[in-house]
Image 1 (cartoon, rainbow, N blue to C red):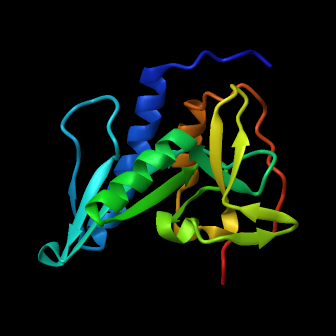
Image 2 (cartoon, rainbow, N blue to C red; image 1 turned 180 degrees about the horizontal axis):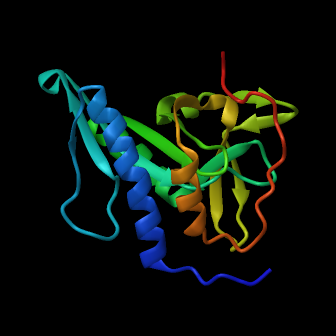
Length: 180
């Protein structure tokens, strides 16, 4: 398999597709969405406000497929620490959402819920693993995620075009991964 070079423009475009879909879902549920005005790095993707400000949450959207070797998904540990501190400092919920083009769905949960310990198939979550580039990743079981929406095949195929994985995607099979 040919090695792909990470490209900010490609990642940004793919991420924007996922963010726009999540914003659309939130708006349909009567959330008012505010986004950072600048392009590039920011601490979260959107601020969602509902009921005249009585409900407020920070939202970050990760447009990427789940892990290959674990029935799990995750983020860079450094990003997690930033999100956790923002949530704590501002006493605000932080909603982490994944747009997964290979599962054809959007799932996520609040950080506080994701951080509740879970033991599954001999593994403990959350857990920290070392990524392929030596970076620390914080991962959560897919069973800790709430189903948000299905994405259509057209959107999933469009997102797959922008994948920057350097390996074949063939995740470990699992049965239903959502908590009933």
